[in-house]
Image (tube, rainbow, N blue to C red; front, top):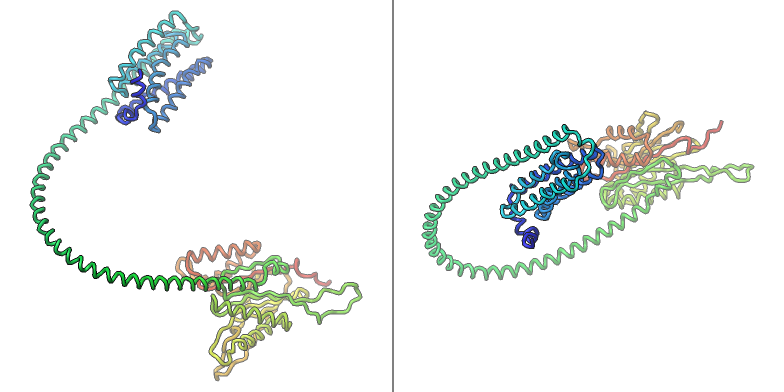
Length: 553
């Protein structure tokens, strides 16, 4: 018994199981599980709930054992108890159901187990199960004779006995037939494999003879190789001398590489310093831009889509509120009326992008502050003309070849008069009322730079003021050309103004943050990983009766 237990737990023994053993075992467990399920259901139907625990318990153990079997662990251990329970379980169920006759001789399933275990146990071990089978038969007869169990009323009918006997005998016989056919089929396969192996053995013998002849040829070649090795030895000495020469050259190259690495290190350090400086310039540039919260104090429904191409940008936006003290009137009220105010908002595209554009944006921001907030020039065409003159003066464009400048759209909103005044230097204004989109084009002259007439004399610049009445809810959009000039799409073309206008009509009824996100998603999908060619800036704001004072009746 000790040797049997040791053999069951031996991993060496587990590794020697043939595939036919495992397939037969799996078939056996499935068949016995189906039989136990049928008998469990049959007991439930008869109202024998306590007795049904036995077949259902066997079923649960079989399924658990099958899971362990497929996991490849403890197969011998599970197989041992599976056979043990399969031999004893039918006799126990037969006794509980009232004996051989009442159960239709359900102990035949134990006979099936004894026969089938031959297929998945080695011959020297399956004989050990025969005494247990005989013992179960003797004990089963003794229990039926000396300790009979009451027969359920349903099983007292003779035709039921016959049906159960036929069912048990038919199932057990069928299982034996199909398992026998399975192993006959395996035996035929083995014969075919043996024939194939015999054929391959003859081929191997023929190849062995060819290899012997080939070995003789190799021996002859080895003698030739020895002669070649002598020649190679001489050449090796010559190579050693050349290697010394190469080593000297390598030392010189190492010295050169160390010098180059030092130069690369210094270059990386300088590059990092430049990048740090540009990032700091970005923080300064962002600091001078008006806060969106300030803009939304005056235009609650507004957004700014700002996407620089590089770290710093040549595009910038400007916002200011100017209160005109000279327009105060004397009233009899205790509190004076609010000061009339003008709201100025602008989107500016400076020459270039990156660091050069950022310098121009700093100059433009400061000059706009001086023109509007200090000098209180609030008419849009005058602001553009004054900015043009100051740019030319600041960059000394009368005397040098500098042509830097900026394109811009500038709006002045008068809430009291319910008007929006616009002037543009090359850049337009787009506004939407209802489903109608109107574009107001700017003048074809930038801010700054040189523009000469045909007689090569400097030409004075004047800009046109356009007035839009604020009689109905209106969305206004000012922007630079970076968005519509971006290349992308299937054919790698520009986005173009027409497609941009269609997009604005599509998003006009959405909340400001949704409009901004749709602009970002659209241009991102259009670019599809392509390089951004210019800075992008789009400002949108809505003016309606919620932010305008009531009209006098």
